[in-house]
Amino acid sequence: MRDALLKKWIQFRHCEEGVTLVEYGVGVALAVIVFGLFGAVLAPEINGAFTAAGNGMPGAAVAIP
Image 1 (cartoon, rainbow, N blue to C red):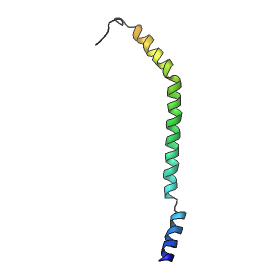
Image 2 (cartoon, rainbow, N blue to C red; image 1 turned 30 degrees about the vertical axis):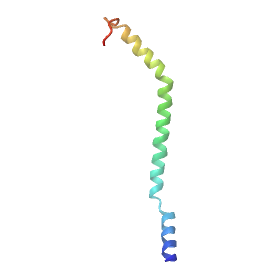
Image 3 (cartoon, rainbow, N blue to C red; image 1 turned 90 degrees about the vertical axis):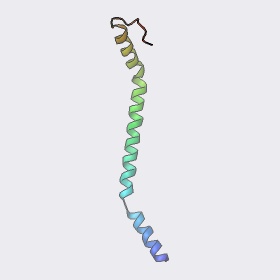
């Protein structure tokens, strides 16, 4: 029984399938953080651009309920 468990443990330690999943997870997390920071930094400028565009349209003073 001990030898079987030891053999399974050795196979588990040398298996690299989970490593790829972890690498993809880290990559996705990093991308989310980077794009989130860019969005947070650029949000005021984007909001200003949309506000200026909306104010420049005819009938912009009309409130829509």
